[in-house]
Image (cartoon, one colour):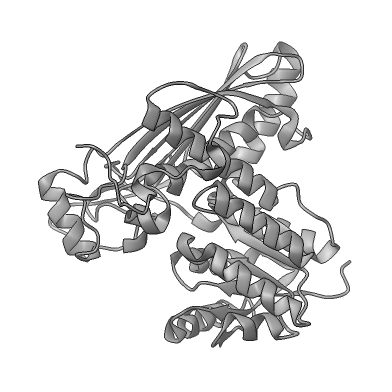
Length: 415
């Protein structure tokens, strides 16, 4: 049994941090002790939430540097906006260079907005000499982990390895304005959510126990489009909701993306991953779907096929909320309830895994290097969509590539 508990600090106090805090009720080896946000009142609210959940005696810090320097903080979870990733990491490393110490740093998806920033994140964490992790919650979904185990133990063992994996993440759009801006977020829905879908599909098609690199990527093909939010009525709605700085008439980012990635295994067997992501989905709320297909067997997951449902008639007209499901899209009709989203989406198992890895001094394979690899794949998808062709892996120019909507000139998608 571990002799001590980890003290964890969070960079960021918004939606993602609060998801992690609620999941921490299932983490036994670490306590939430600190929150930093550019807005101190937000950090104090998140710290109060952690204390109310009894997941740690958290307090708000005025600076990242103060949190890193506090001996009570052993590791950090970076959950702030994409555009602050590198700056936050630089501040961490600078504080460590002055004598502070940490055990590890974990970073939310995506690791970076492009390959150049991703390489900088890897460079910084290696300079710091700490353990590091890439927070990809969907790999830890109980339905994914158990489904993969059963398919490989029974189907693949009898009929041969699976050959096709599909994954999709779809909802009606992000919570915060910066997500919608390609110059701040790094892209549109492809950068925001396909990092999940491509990685979980690769994971499903990878033999249990085999390393991430056991499959060889050969080709990438992708398409993007702005289907809903660039229509005039939705341009106005989006501006009303998110503010005038989000202008999808002049600078739309993609709200739909699809990609196909070809792999081969060590025996040269062809394998295919298909991924779809959308901010233009109309349904109960966030929908995650996965499929794994092989000779004589298949597996499927749909998070909206929940065990509980409620029905509210049109005579009930309550306030908009997300008390049934993330990105809830209605308050009337027949609607699914997810009993515990932090468990079903994998956050609880993810945080338990990384806390134990850091506590035991073990470098996880799901590291900043894995995050960089996913970023490279995302940029190749954008490059394929822009050039409207299938690309052989690894395409030239990837290290300096930026999606059109993220370029300094502010070029958007063609209407």
